[in-house]
Length: 461
Image (cartoon, rainbow, N blue to C red; front, side, top):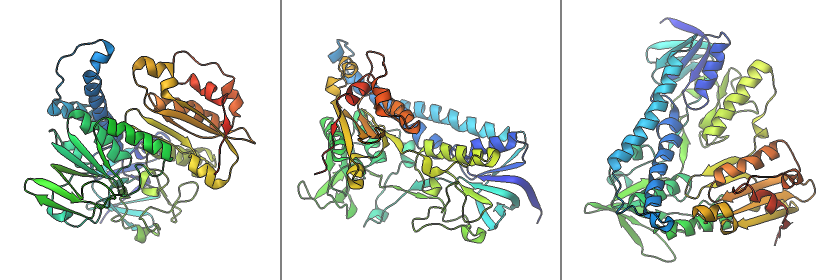
């Protein structure tokens, strides 16, 4: 069988793969791009872009119902789920087509569609073709985790992927999983008009966040009529006529929850189990993530792993940053390291949560002497003017170095406000530089210097 030789092979077209392929092609390298499914990966097809498009529709419905609070009469509000889905498909589809056209238009690129598997350290088979290259980049992403729940094989269920095909309104959506994906879908469909119950096995929602953040988000969701069941071990599901019944173990509340539809949102797993990685000398950890060094090179020095499959981040922005690290190191010998990256992400419920750096709990565990500034969104003029006063802001700084350790901005525009703090953290600026800076009024960001002027010692008790 004829072996096709390339300078580089890029497996997967998620957030980092296409940008890297384009950079390699622009440098004059002969590049093979392999995609087994939809171009654009999770973000484009069933992640960020389509879900945030749906969230925008849900926000419009929510705001329309509140219109009278602003002196605006709208009449009865109804949601046409087929049109909601059509809008989502149009936005997501445009991105999907854009990525495919980009890859097929590379001057030195060749696109192969099919599932790639390693043959050896430098060789990959896709369909009936064999490709070889000195450099191979794996950007295969992840997929929804389907937990081991008794009875799950006998009932229909949804994941974040199959939710993209929903063009109807579930009467009662049961969401198993109280973390980022689950909470976004829960609020979204509640605003579309579904009854929603969240079942979370842990003691609180989004357990990686501080307790005050977790509790405030729970309050926000419950205010909108979402039933939240924490400390609930979802031990079994079964059909109950045309409905689905989930048994739970709770200190309070009914022992069973019955709904029309079941959404599983309990995590993700990397798409690394069917790549033949062992044949290429590429190690994975116990969870299936590809083991990489600081430059994202695998245990095979000819192969790099980028994006969700390397366990170094589960976001579109971390995947793109992986591309930047690899490309800068390859072409500019920059010596960039993934450990230099500062934690940053958002939870896109409404109001959104913007998070950077360490949590308060992490600071306390580390024994760092810190200062904290807090402010309720009810004390932010812009939030009051918009009629969106749920949430709060808090910033932590190191008492000795005066550098920002982390922040949680839970409130309107919180996902944007945190970026000025992130910039200061990367620049290693003392918080006093932000404290003395003038901000525009009326904005949410203008309260950052105010908070930094009201810092108090963080209690470690």
